[in-house]
Length: 139
Image (cartoon, rainbow, N blue to C red; front, side):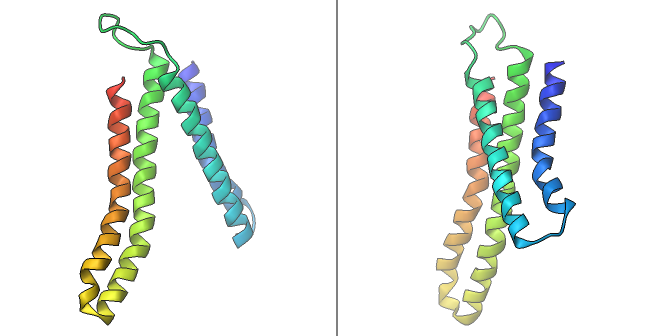
């Protein structure tokens, strides 16, 4: 029962900024507030997942790990960190790749420098996967 309530609350918190932005006239001020609300929800979910993941007692190998709720919270945290890392990578690559194409079209010697910034943006997804593997390694 707790897992159902936790999942419903989690989905509501994720959808809340989008409901706020699309419920009225879509202005820049409303968009900024929705982004800050999304950031607040992310921090809230991250802290909640951290408490449930790292707040339990250490179990021995013979007990089989934590209870179902901590395992579910760990899977949700791993999915969130992977998904948000991929979304962040998409946002970063969209702007850096466009700038890299523009820089290369003006001067072909800028190719190496511009690809470094695109590769740095791709690193965000790799960091998300690494954190997800670290979380799943504790389950």
